[in-house]
Amino acid sequence: MERFLAGGKCGGFQTKIPKDPRNETQDMYWEYANSGCIDNYALRALTREPCVQGANTTSECLQGAKDLLNRFTFILDQSCLNESVEALGSALHLNFTKDGFESRLHHWHANLSVRDRFGNDTLYEYVQTRFRRDIELYEWSKNRSIVVCNN
Image 1 (tube, rainbow, N blue to C red):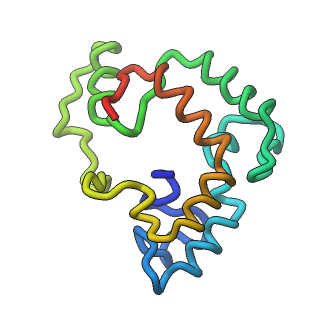
Image 2: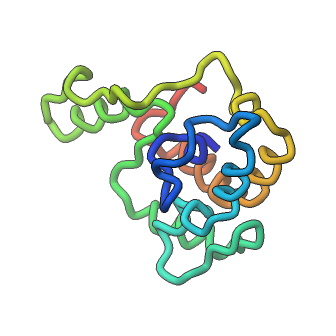
């Protein structure tokens, strides 16, 4: 859900859509929620065959992504990306410092829940249903991350 709201929107939405939905931009967010470029993004990136089908994405598609991730040496969790990159650097004996990689563009919205950031329960529930397999993959991968975040 954070990925959906994150900066760097895919496709033609990159420049025309604001960071969080507002009343006057709900139509754009509905269009974005239905675009192919955002549909279960992580699963699409991690699976070979075109198995991503929105809310109808199968558990076999999800398992294919899990099988691939099980072959990875390191998985990083975006929820604590800075700490994960530091741990990765340490494991690889690289001298990473937080100041050297901390994103100036990535800002957490600690004061608002993701649901509140959507500002529209129907849109939130639609996106949650459509991207449920991506959400399942993220929940599964969090416990395999080099750093298990406190969120």
